[in-house]
Length: 158
Image (cartoon, rainbow, N blue to C red):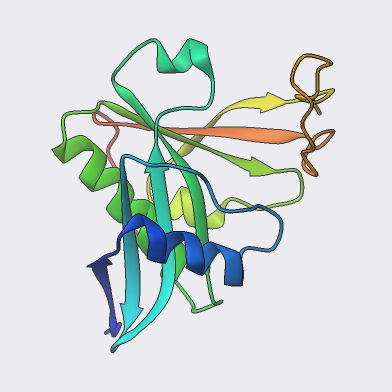
């Protein structure tokens, strides 16, 4: 039996964990809620959940996005975070939770937590514009959009 457990974590501590452990993204600015996974007293992973980045999806009003997860590499921590994020979002009354993976990431943790691929996104040109200059090191990277809904049954492995 796993000695991992879901724990509450505030945004500041989640951001600090992302700073220390995420391999290619910086900390997000805000959130709706954050959760952690601990092994004993040690925090080994965090998930930060917020409004969808896409304004089109955001307009629906009943969707949240897993904006960031980060772990120290502890086995099954990421799957546990995605599953807990799913349960918490639905308990709060949202009916859909989305997230993205970058090209080359398997999505095994997402599949284990009941998410499914709904779209493959080609690399985007970037968010930088003359009126709002931005630097995003993750532009020009293909992404996969994952989704889980309140009405989706999770298949359990025997």
